[in-house]
Image 1 (cartoon, rainbow, N blue to C red):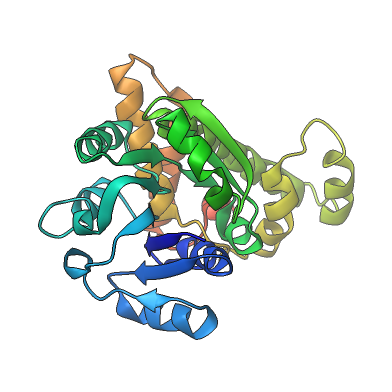
Image 2: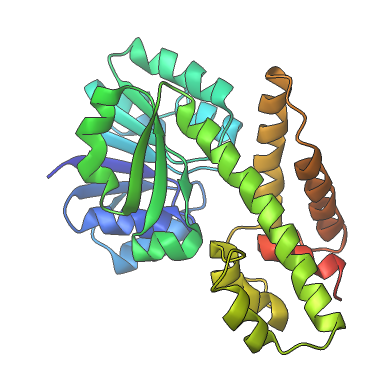
Length: 287
């Protein structure tokens, strides 16, 4: 049994921390306190009111926050959780952030004798709730091996990808794939509707062939029905794609199609769809 602090009790973090609480002593922190209040009603654990003032020392600190600035804040000297770290603690970050900030944080924590793993996740809210996330890991391989049991609490596919930042680079690839797939699925459904084919018949046959994908299996029917409340929001997708473009620029890579899809997501934001899930891309075509 480990002593764990989980930072970020959102749609993904809440069920992940819940799985950990079944076997470990879990403390939680979230800037929006009501989320902690809701979590504590369903799971066993303790709420931390202020990161910088807790005197508890943790074996693992796990975070699932919004962006680079959030990660910098929770690992800063004045506002962060550094007081809660001890030598040989492991900090696991499940956020999608830039490889640059990952390497910066890893270096800072390494000076304290603490290992840092960048461990972005894929699988959406449903994957978090079912404990079936895909987790891509960058950082020390020894720290990864020490963390497998923890990660297995909510991960189905856990893969070590290499040195610090490798997890985030893999997540960038994941998001590039999703952007193209959702746009292709949007256009195919639009074509289907315009040609008056039966959606159930179309899905039955094409999902058994080369066109099959997670997006098709999980979003085809909801996209046809115009339902877009399944977790990962357009705002977050655009944040992730901005990370992809910045990293691509450092390598001289032009992500031509992904840039077009990002512009389409901007169109969805202009329609007021900031909080709709990523499959709402079809709303550009069907209103």
